[in-house]
Length: 473
Image 1 (cartoon, rainbow, N blue to C red):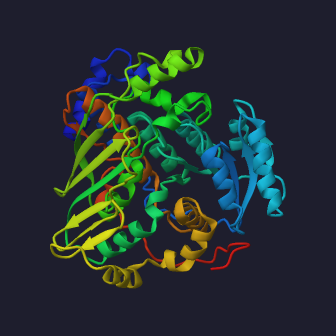
Image 2: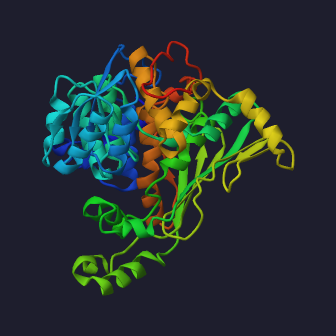
Image 3: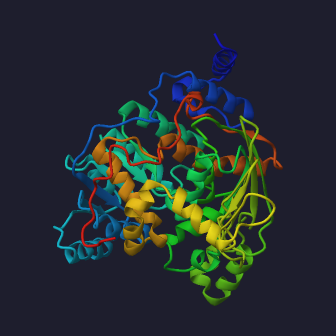
């Protein structure tokens, strides 16, 4: 019996209600987190990394949530001939009407409609859907993904895919049990410079990677306080009491792939620190003076710090720095810096740069690197993706690649372990901040399989035959 197993058994025998109410009811202190980790690590599992699900020639999709991201997904997916949007769900019927209009403009048959607060459950229970595509407020991502998988559907979700450690484990274990893919829709992994640097890192151009940095620095102060930006002000409410990095995945996903996290290395532990709030509380007061009936409830809330910085150390002794700031009037940045023994790449501030010595290379030399190291997916569908759009094309490449993998029975580039690991930085950063930047362990959702999992495949071997309607390269 392992020491972790002994510790787990000792702790649950000391508790009075853990077994009766379910193991997630264990406390939230560090010793209980260790017990919970031991429990999950010792469970039987099926490794979803590298898993090739049975082929689906024509992927039938149900989309839940038709706001900003969901309506964009309808537009993008409608270009993929081998994907059928067969179901649409939103608790606002007018949003479904707008989505149906987009389909009609492409000559696509109307999708089945689901509405009401529980309509998404009926969609997941439907027998004519292969993939559930979730574009709802954050708190609904995990419940919807779990319900979809339990009803026999592959599922994808906008970011973050989970808000707690417990939710992360639920997604992992449900995906493993049902053998249904659970992918977080991290679009930045399909941006052009990020794919270039991933392929260059894979080819050893930067030497041994030592350090990486990512961020989500995006001034959303006006949007978060906008009356119509987010339904029922849900995104502002996320910032009311949660103090940490609430949105880590955009900066983390691409650099984690460069570092082969979950596929040769893993995150061991992290620390996190937040500034005070100098902007959201003041904005709430200003808004309440203009419209006390609407904004009065947002005054006096313990808003999270405006800037959060988190540092992660990996098992192989490499470091990651992440930042989160969605209030300051700073230029947009995801940083995307990878630093190795032979070179460095950094995307922000524009223009993107690469150095192999102590100076950034010239633009014509950078173009030569694009010519040599641009991955096959970009050569195959990159020009089309730029024409379809979605953050410059990365959204469409993500969607196209997902459908191509499902159709051809290929492993996904982002599996359930990636989605939950990149998302779990949110709750872990909150815990560290609350304990004056105390170190917290990062769970190994792969249960040790990171040692043998293979890196993301950058070729189209076995795929590439998914076609696009109405646009030519």
